[in-house]
Image 1 (cartoon, one colour):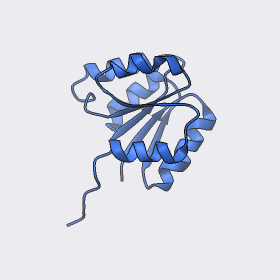
Image 2: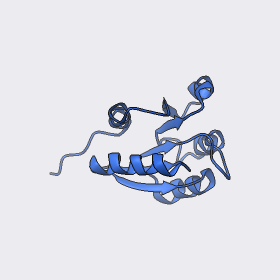
Image 3: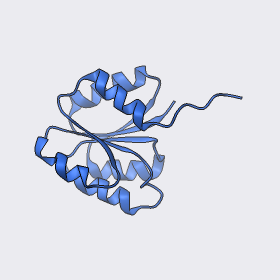
Image 4: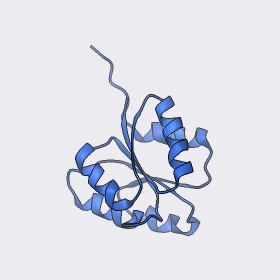
Length: 125
């Protein structure tokens, strides 16, 4: 299935995402801060990035801006997960943010949104 990079410093959120997304058959990588997440995005070229806003080292605003400036990374869809409800309007103006979800989130809706953002699976010939 897909390679998904989760960039979040909240252990419980990361564990939930790993459980949900691994159960769907995806390969999950985790970065605990924005700086590490940006480096991992360069190394792994994931199919999707699930990105928190408030993190140490580099926040989600800075990470998404850096991803957008990189021609190789700007194509990667970004799903923002944040507890900061007032940042929705800001992220709706960022061209490379595909979807925005507030914490806490319903697992079913998260999975539905992940499916929307990922390319359809290719059939083995």
